[in-house]
Image 1 (cartoon, rainbow, N blue to C red):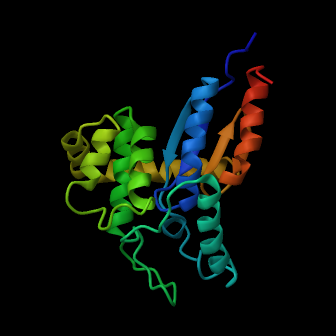
Image 2: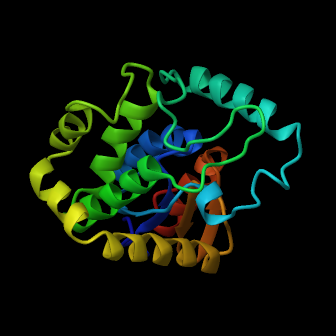
Image 3: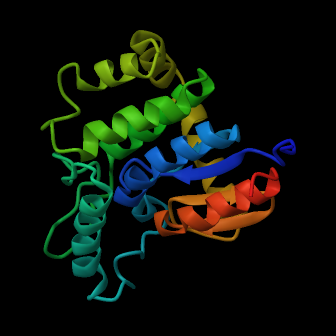
Length: 219
């Protein structure tokens, strides 16, 4: 006989993170198979939380990262291409990042509003596919985001009004999520926290699943 779940999985997640995109379908599947909920906490991309991120990064890291994300997407059978445009405005050679990041900030605010409307996980899943599956260019124009919002079961006009009318609130929630990520003992995404244990990276999904199933007595 299964035990009651200890808690939800707390998921710290970013729209700009390819590994967040790759992890989300497996987290949704884990939730559906175990009955353990996923409490998604959207954070800004790392470069917006740590201005020195690229300055201190090993020069070998970015080329490896580019290869690994493509390879792992192929392994999972997930369509993959970097977003067009990138939510972060950045020089591809110097890696210098622009001081203002309206697209990334807009996505973050929409993610907060979607969660407060009760559809955060579905919204993030729909928008991450829009960004990363390679089917759409100029995702920020036209009705692409609106259609993703509808696929998540949310009302676009309501979501847009909330973001437009109270940007400070959504920014404060993003900061609170970043602070909670730090308190959980990590800085990167995706980071999952369950029953007092922290798991960083989509490559820890198997261990997370094992831990969840142990806690509910299904293994």
